Image 1: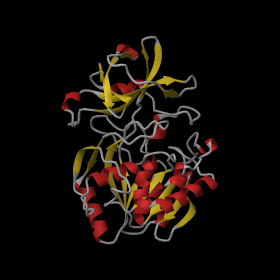
Image 2: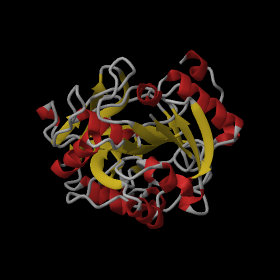
Image 3: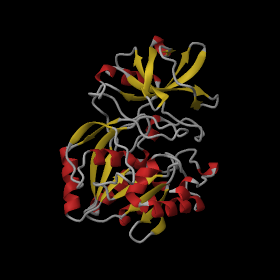
Image 4: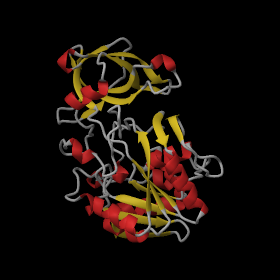
Length: 353
């Protein structure tokens, strides 16, 4: 993957705003068996799949997870990443959130700042507060465990937050632009800090066309935390659920010769967290700290539909596990040559066996 990690993505290839129509993005397809790369419109996706295939989609809704505040005299923006009380491996952190505190850049977005310090209090709108207690992980101090004063933090976000966005975008977008056609409300109001963006180009028309061709849609839930495009580090534990019906669909497809195609890296992480070494998926829910690499391999997923990731991002190890390094390098080199757009509002690529 050394060639891919040295790939330069020109800044002008960052998607700065959503496409005029969700399904108006482009689709770059890589086929591992033939080593081929081909160019398509996303609307052609139904014709690229076949009866018996299963598309696994993430139904998590995107939260308005960014809230402005002050840390002493310093203006800050808090990115609320993940609630920590779903039977977390560390029970003492119940009632906490993992958060990232960032510095506003004066252009409507933010830049990283040093984490903490421990005991610092962030003053939030409507008199609420957030106490920073300790780094979430010994790997670094970007994300912190914090105790909010709000009894219903998710409800507070819906009243005071806005979607997280980074400097490559040109302006704020309504929260609806960050929801996918698959997203459904969670009973507790929770969801993803950042959009499960591989599902964004789908429309009801495309889903109808897929189903009419015999392609099944199987839902999972994985509530994503913040990624912070400026920092390339392994993903932190995230909460997921694979239902008995989805496990049954996936297992039936694999035994019947169909392909299991994950829509997004979140769907891969959830399925592989529920799979054994033979690729059999069982119903599962809870926290996953699984980091997928070529050495670990994938067992339940045959293909992946995903956005274009930064060349140094840890997600690319997962893509390499699915597609192999030679094909992935060809796909990304072709994406740069073809002027494909990166990030959550950008184009997508489909990696097939």
